[in-house]
Length: 639
Image (cartoon, rainbow, N blue to C red; front, top):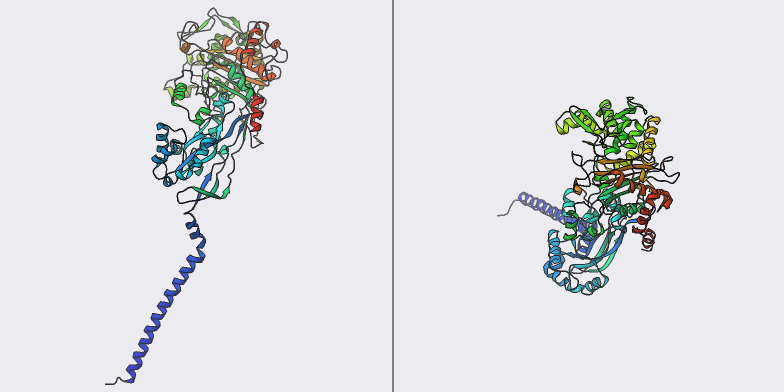
């Protein structure tokens, strides 16, 4: 039966619509596929080409040269030296233990060294290069290179390692560097990829630590073509990083070396400040240590020797130590009383050997007493009773304020480790820290630098510089960065009465230049270079002791502060000899020698010493072994 023409037309139209829809769908699919292929093959060609290249190209960071550190005269204090080492990439090395076993046949690696290297490799991600041996000789590096095909994943490298030419002279000032440890990574927020470079060294102490970001520099990058075994075939591209900034310190290395040699055998420290600029010229502390041992990996025996030494060589006593300042504090009490208008310079106090306050006796160091004392005589003879009397009238609040005015009780912002703030106590401090009220006996003890009062040798040097100039001298350690001078810090007037300051200075002059002065034996006899100073002896225990009849650790500390030349001050010095006994015998002669060395730029003529001291001075000059800095500078220039 034939279909009506109308039905045939409708059927044809239906087929045509389905064909169009299907064709459109196929066309859309084909167009999308073509567009995607164009996107992958044309638009994203560089990206996929890079992904393919990464199968044979490896990028690696290049550690920058660490910034150098010099003294104020251009003497090198921290330099860089070539260091040959071997690195391993675990994912390329196969079995790390087997690879290290092979390596040990070419270079010295005992069982302990292999175990340490294996742990370091396993603790890092498989793709991270890890240094497994360093400080190799050229012959050892050559042997590894020749045997390269048998050592997949192991590559010799040349890098830079830190060196300290002045060795132990400035270990507490410059500090030292060491490899980045897991502890370092856990306690710092620095995400610098340089920290992942094998054996990368960062500052651990001193200026190396505090100036780390300036000294470190920024990383470079090298692109190497490698084979299937991970060995480098050739270098494709290299972009050097930026070296760290070079830093010049205010330190005078020869003066520092003299101080270290002069104090050798003691547990002591000394600080020298240029009173015109605030520059720290020397910051010595003994005993000391060789920072190069820490850079190269200090042995357990050497480290145990340092930590077990009762004289604590790891502590930078000049800035970290905090001691009762003893009689070197008496200028503070005197100025507090003068500034408050409670005394004048000629008013006298009778010293009968002690005063009794609240049923307790406070003794003078001279049991028979000094008789009638005015300001000058009290400083010259270091009379304690005079200052007990001032303390009762002045009170601790005024004494504490004057302490801070003269630079005590303040933590100075220097790039050194654990700088102490000392302590200038007052009533609020004792109530907060000790939960007790301040009593008059506390004030009497504080007036002579005992009790709760604490000061570092740095602070005592600052105090002396401020007394010498009448200005608020602030210490500076960094002189320049990349040859750009660091601005001097403001040193405004202390706004103290100049007549009061002059009277205190004259008392300090009498200490060193009057026959009855406590430091007369340590005077400077050369005209134009005489010194003004103050001796101090601070008790270690609450009981006065005979320093000759007690063990070393129970003896009093010996102190001296001074400045010179007296008529035109240039240098201020502080010296602390731990358990040295009396300041006049143990500290004053050292301070005199330091000031002479600073003023003359080396050994002074014997005529600058008192006649009775010239024999000892000559023996000192003959016996001290000082460093040859000219040779050190020339050697650094050749390198």
